[in-house]
Image 1 (tube, rainbow, N blue to C red):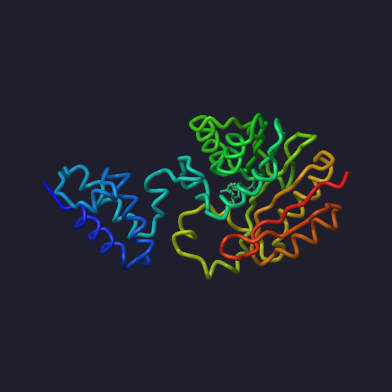
Image 2: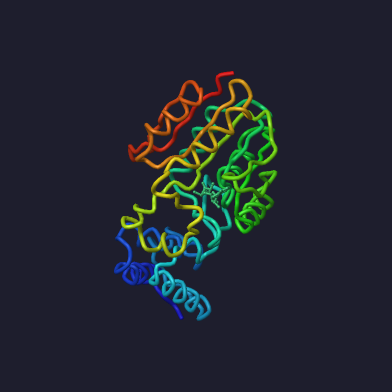
Length: 284
Ligand SMILES: C[S@@+](CC[C@H](N)C(=O)[O-])C[C@H]1O[C@@H](n2cnc3c(N)ncnc32)[C@H](O)[C@@H]1O
């Protein structure tokens, strides 16, 4: 059958509007038009009739039903974009966030030397580690995670995107990978307190892996403290550490690094003005 692209676009927005705010519904509609139906924004503007076979219609309806249930579009499509690269995602990994793109940008801007030895703790989909492997010349990038499934996803993204990673399975609350003499340690560990669940979207709570999100209420800095304590003996002199953080804990995380002897410790805000990164350098 033939359809006007604008009618399809409006129908998608209508079907999503009970569940998503208008901007989000429009953004998802644009993505589905382009990436599922091959209808570009320019086709919507021109609005000439197009052919849509029943397979594509069924596929679209199935996606819209799943979206209405609250399943994130990234898990439905099986991929998402991060710094211009397409990453496979599934329910074993957290969906990469925009704040993490800002985190990676800062690390890249401040670490342009050749051949750095880097460790990403809590690799998930691989979005941080693979970006560093792809964008920092000759970097040797190690990455670890407690989850076998996450490591498999990071491995597949690493192969597909040509960002070589050396992967380690470990629970950093018990043991770290045997790596020394690191130039840079980065981590976006679980940092949401369980009490914060009440303010979270149902689709995050129901679909994203708990182990990637939550830390116990009574010890919200657990991962930061454990990593900092290990890092101070494993970083080279002048080596650097970068944490993505819970906006509520900028100052506490900064004090933690200072207490462990790190210098040039700072809190960096994200584009929304929230404390989002804490960074420091190894003293000696
Ligand atoms: C917030 S997610 C970050 C994922 C990815 N780096 C990103 O920025 O999108 C935290 C990751 O830490 C991993 N993780 C949780 N507990 C861990 C532990 N005890 N040891 C190692 N990794 C852990 C989770 O499996 C998850 O992949």
